[in-house]
Length: 215
Length: 215
DNA sequence: GCGTAGTAGATTGTCGACAGTCTGCAGATT
DNA sequence: AATCTGCAGACTGTCGACAATCTACTACGC
Image (cartoon, rainbow over all chains, first blue to last red; front, side, top):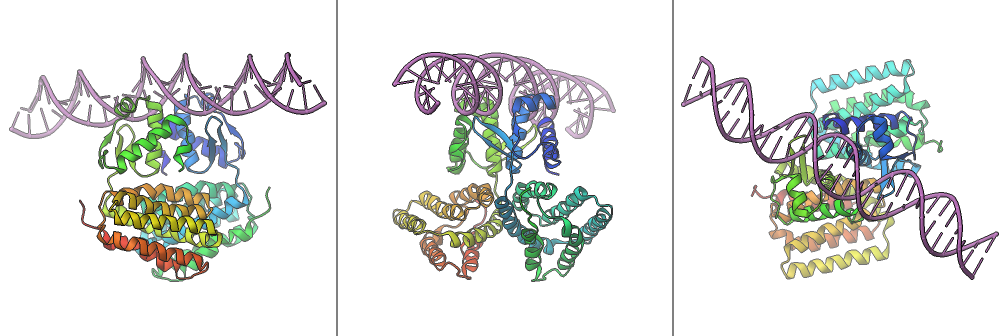
C-alpha cells in the first residue's frame, strides 16, 4: 500500500477512516467533524486534518472552506466519470505492463484469480471486490509509471466504494469476473496483442450495463 | 484557477511557493524547511504544512517522513512519464471537448492563439508557456469531467516546470506552437475527426524529440 | 588512522488553545 | 404573518509550544 508508509497517526487515521467508509459504517454524505473524529480516534486535530486532506485526494471525502468535510456521495454521473477515466488509465497501464511482464507477476495474478474462484464459491462479495482491485493494482505497479499509479490511486477507492456499496448489479459480476480476468492475463502473455484495448473497454466499460438504479 | 478558491493563508502559500518554483527562485532539489518558510511568508507552520501537501499532490514537491520537503527534481524519465500520461488524458479530454464545444469556447481558444502570436513576436518565452498550458487547461474544462481535470492538475505544473526551466529545446517550440494549436482547433471544429488522437500524439509526444540533454 | 557509539542541534510530528467564520434561532420591526 | 437583525453555539483556520525523530559532529576504542 501507499498510505501505510506515511507518518504514524495521520496515516493510521487515513486507513481507519477509509475502511469505515468502504464498509459503510460512515454513510455517504455523513458529516466528518474534526473534533468528533479526533476524540473518537484519540488523536488531536492536526493528524485528522491531514488525513481528511488525503482522503479528499482519494475522492472519498469532499470538503468546503469553513464548512467541513463529508463522506462523498457518488452519483451515476460520478460512476461514468470513474469508468471513462479508468479506461484511459488502464489502457496505458496494460500497454506498459505488457512490455514489462515477468513470470513471477503472472504467477501472482493467477494466484489472485484462484482466490477469486474461492471467493465466488464461498460467496464473499467484499473479498471479491478487494481481489478485483488488487488484480488491477498489480498491473498498475507492473506498468512502472509513478504518475500513472498516482492517478490510479486517486480513483481506486471511489471505484471500490461503488462496488462495495452494491450500487452495481453484482449478479453477473460474480459470474464473469474470473473469466474476464483470465482473458486479460492471456492478453498480457501475448505481449503485443492489439485487441487488449477492446478487452479493457469491455471489462471496465461493462459496468455501465451493470449500473443499477440508485439505492 | 483551483487553488485560489482555497482558504486564505494555505492557498496563498501554495500560489506563492508554486510561482517561486516555476520562476526558478526555488531551485530544483532545494530543501523546503517548514520553519524557514513560515518565517519568510509570515504565517505559522500549519498552513505551510498544508501548502506543502498540496504542492506534493501537484508534483512540484517531494517529501519524506521526518526528512522534510524539497523542490522536485525532474529527470528525463519524469518527462517521459509526464508525456505518456498526458497523452492519455488529453485524448480523453479532446474526445469529450469535441462533443461539448461551444462557439464561445472556440472564440476563447482563438484569442489565446492570437496572444501566442504576439508572445512569439515579442519573444516572451515564459508568457508563451503559460498560454500553451492555458489553452489545454480550457480544453480540460470543456471536457466537463471533474476527475479528469483533477488528474490534469496533478501533472500540469510539472509540465510547466519542465517547459519553463528550458529543459526542452524551445527553438522550434516557438515556430510550431501556433500552427499546432490552430490545427487542434480545426480538429475540434470537425467534431468527430478521428485523426485527432494522432494529432495529440504528435503535439504532446513531439516533446520527446525536443527533449534536450539535462541542464 | 579508521570505525563506531554517543550526543547536541535542528527538523518534523503532534498537541491544546485562540481567532475567524458559518448556521440556526430568537426577537424586533413592518 | 413575514422578513430582517443580532446573537449564541459549533465548527474550521491558525498559532505557538512540546515530543519524537533524524543528522552531523565529537570523542572514544581499536
